[in-house]
Length: 317
Length: 263
Ligand SMILES: Nc1ncnc2c1ncn2[C@@H]1O[C@H](COP(=O)(O)OP(=O)(O)OP(=O)(O)O)[C@@H](O)[C@H]1O
Ligand SMILES: Nc1ncnc2c1ncn2[C@@H]1O[C@H](COP(=O)(O)OP(=O)(O)O)[C@@H](O)[C@H]1O
Ligand code: SF4
Ligand SMILES: [Mg+2]
Ligand SMILES: [Mg+2]
Image (cartoon, rainbow over all chains, first blue to last red; front, side, top):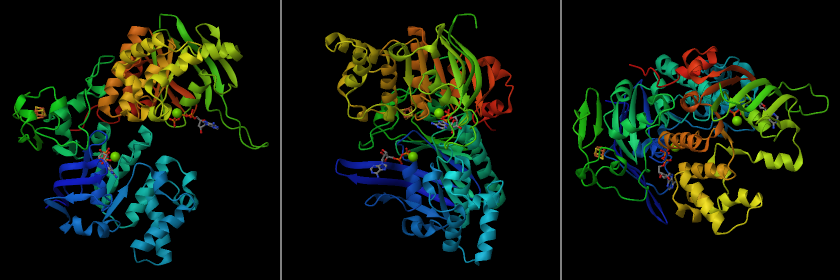
């Protein structure tokens, strides 16, 4: 059984202007010990999916799923209890995740006291060892610091140490490197990979950056307009993407074209989140769309270890 | 580079004043930068946060003082210009910033945003100006009916197109772009990069393009400059730098992510 199983999740947020379909139909299967990427354009429901798993969906949101289970427990009932105990969040903005007026020592200690039954002495040692585990060179100095005295990369390491301090073994990382430099971001990703192998963590990596998927993830789920449209091992998806949307995303990258050549931009934009969708959500922008695409929900396709939704048969180029 | 230089920077040192009367001198934000931008070419400037990229651009725009060194713009001693001459000459440089929403006033219509620089230059409003604005929008891939929209109603990509149109309003020869696609999705980033390539061609623009993302700028730049803690650690033709990076940091940036995707 996968550690996380999400089947047919939808999250609908009522607003005065009508219902927002933040998540329409998302499936996720995450095995213990993997880094599972979730990629898609802005507004496709990545953050809302993560927040729902943490029990942090906005008040009034309607959450419906055929299955929403973490390690056998029903997240629709227990998400709030699991958050902090088993499930931790690493967000895009480490500065906002830390309290600017408290020392790191105090903030680490608060987390340890709330989540772990330890003596003061033991907590102090644990805080230092967790900071060291995130690759911070001088944990004692970091403990004495305030957030503004640390660089963005160091702050993100502290946030990761805090998540570990809760005892969480499943981390939801929402764009954890977007606010960091490429080289600092690469170090944070390497750290997450190390923690996964050393401590048996599992990570859900939310990103809009294919480089992050390539660099850090084992498998990836591609989202489009609140739908999961393709899932599989990263190598397969990057080399033989099945879904025309995944193909278009990869083709739009600067690496995909020769120096100076035109890039294959995806024209148009995602369907507005308040509108309903008929047939395939990508049809209005899909270069391979056929008449049936606008009318019927696409069937599942399969090639090697990856799956996607499309009317085109798997063998079509 | 065989053509004439539009911008020549020699031994440029930029240092922010240390706070406090007796504070020791801070280390320079830019530490002796020298490079040349040829006409109709694009120079990509890459470097980690705090490496001095924005400081370099600000100094070139004369928004902050220079400690020493020289900047020649179209052969002119650019640092010697003062007052109105400076103000007028500066308009030969178009500027596009990272966050299109922050750089456009949300409540103004697109027509108002684009007429601002023209009015400031003393042009008169009226049908001729509206025609000019419509042409600018169309050059940037937006239909004329965008004129009546407000900036807050635009998507990120559309807002960035408006910001580029505004930068082009006074027909600059040099464009300075600071992280113009960093806030955008890949799909939209590709549209904006294509647009910049088209404009460079059709308007004969020279560009300084600053970004964290080496792969983005390597795609469209003729030459590349890599900065690290105020120093230029790499400067050369893009293909040369990509093929034979001299610095570990450049290698690190080049190897991140998709290139040589994992098996
Ligand atoms: N107004 C200022 N006063 C004092 N120091 C400054 C000021 N602006 C920048 N600096 C310092 O100058 C150095 C270069 O900063 P700059 O903004 O040019 O970097 P950058 O390469 O543009 O970084 P980023 O990628 O984060 O935009 C840094 O050490 C920075 O802290
Ligand atoms: N609190 C909210 N109220 C109404 N709509 C929301 C709210 N939060 C997100 N949305 C909408 O839900 C959709 C998915 O958002 P989000 O999960 O943040 O996307 P992503 O993280 O993929 O960019 C978007 O259309 C967004 O505008
Ligand atoms: S179902 Fe049709 S429109 Fe949708 S991705 Fe496949 S070919 Fe394109
Ligand atoms: Mg998000
Ligand atoms: Mg900057």
